Image (cartoon, rainbow, N blue to C red; front, top):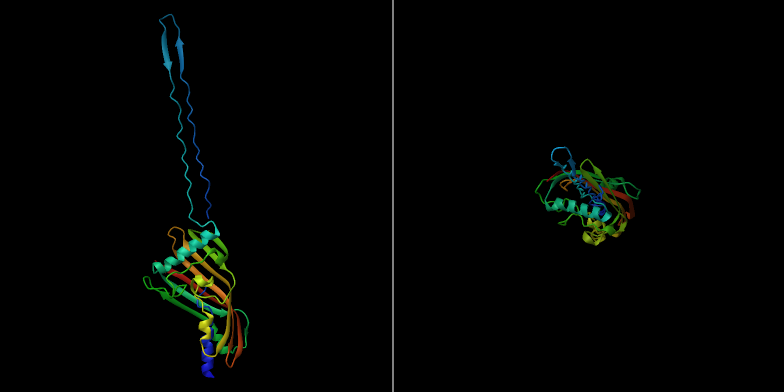
Length: 267
């Protein structure tokens, strides 16, 4: 029975999420001043002396045209632009092998039915790791196992928010609901996070009828507006997990929230 409990703990550890998760262009306006010219006035002074004609010509008053330039902002203006901006910023982390600090937290925010206390403790995790600059971070930065970090499409993102904070762009992409997502580009969550497949969970002896419903996921990136480099990012998602386990029977773990926060980037 002890072995069954150990395998059950391994299942729950495997089932829960391994990952987390402007300025508008002003229309150019050019204002120029049309030079005004004062016509020359010619007056002839008549005296008893022979007539002398004096010509008095005033130089035309000319005003230099005022040149106005419109500075175009590279801040994303639409949902599609926000997604593309985040994709590029996150992908650069792996491409340039940036260093970072990673804080991973996981807990069950909802009901945990039919599970012993020791198994509940298995679900809860809080750990901090680091990755040095130049170190291969393919497996330590989402999406784990791929040479890219995010390939989100507009259809994957339910909504987004954008704001500027003292030289930084903060963009949050909100995901929707997805049942049993798969790694990589075959699912919305897989396009930006590390997910566990049903097949891998059910490959554990004594485990069957696994179902995972992902929801309330998001990716949030804080990016330097000048360099385009990430200074902080968060991947988070929640999942409702159910399965049939030998000895324990049917188990249900609601609203397991997993969050990965990356900071202290070294480029």
